[in-house]
Length: 275
Length: 279
Image (cartoon, rainbow over all chains, first blue to last red):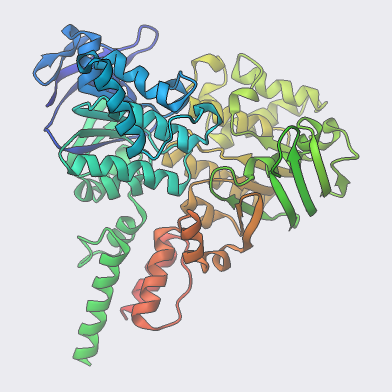
């Protein structure tokens, strides 16, 4: 679905931001991009979205080279949820905001089709449509932005730190919505995220970046347990995984409190029987 | 150091109070963490401690806020700012210079810090925040996270008695966020600076803050020693405030083992607890 082939990109002013990047993402995956500030994560997702074009190499989305794809076509394929919802919201009501994105990307639906899709989306996100985005909380505005992006039914959804500035319940609400659509096979997700608990809970695969290069690629639980890789990328594993690593043998698969507690209880049972 | 008595505040042109009947006392050298859902009044409280509410943001104000014995209503912001240093959530509203070094100099010169002392403080602040290499960079060329660090450094250079930070790690990655908290711990323990921090990163907050206060709809939902507050985990989760997963683990193991266990706030503590249970 997404293919990067030896991609490099440099902004005009500074040195290369990503260098010789190659990876594939298959349909239906939920992939997290990990790394410190400045590792090249946002540049990578912008390349996938075609917001920027590689200076070397190729980015293919559904087999099409992003350097040659028209913006309107790309907007149907790839939805982009920015870190800050205020960068994408531009209308005065939630209904207008959702309709705006649809008119731009889904002219094929016709005006009636767009109207129906707007109402379906409003219902799915529990909006009346009359809300004014800028009088909503940041978490609510992020939901407005997400609703507009998903209304287009993109095949790929890109999330750039979607939970920044949100409180815990807002964060769960956004991520659960995305996760449900991903599991239903509706959308492939590529997420940049600094919250490793969120990565653990929602992503299946992690790509680790540092200094514009790809350092590691694998299942989330396995990547978190690669001490050397985590150190090179300045990433700390989530709490329970970090604890399990310290506890060592027997805890290799414990990533949640429940899993870890189960190992502890089995050990205690074993000790009791021995005694 | 901070003494708030029955503070109720409603912004001008608003009907509902942003803060309602807040009474709070933070001792000198305290380290208080504040958390709560969006719209709980956290930022308003940060503004009230620095006197920015009501001096900059007028409204209906009842009760009193004293910092280092000064009532914020009766004192000018210029005097209050010598005691309370605030790092705002929106750092861009705080930074005025175009070069990092100038930003730090601006504050120190305004405060009349002796010229022979300025270089030492400059180096201290840049080094503590880990941005020595950015000293001559223009603000415009910095990332959001780097700008956050500049804002923190320029406040630290002024050595306030009280440091108030409103989600200072919002744009920072986990390693930098931990670095900021470690820095606050140093300033708190070695220099006796009183720290008040609003933060959504619950794990860091619980590990570093000695006291926690949870706000909801402008009111105090619960406050106390960090571990004591975490013992209300279920009510907090219903409110939309999560607990660190190691704290959740202690509760879970307590139920399963039927032993009384401590509420863990860090991986180190959890490791000791688990090893103890498996002996």
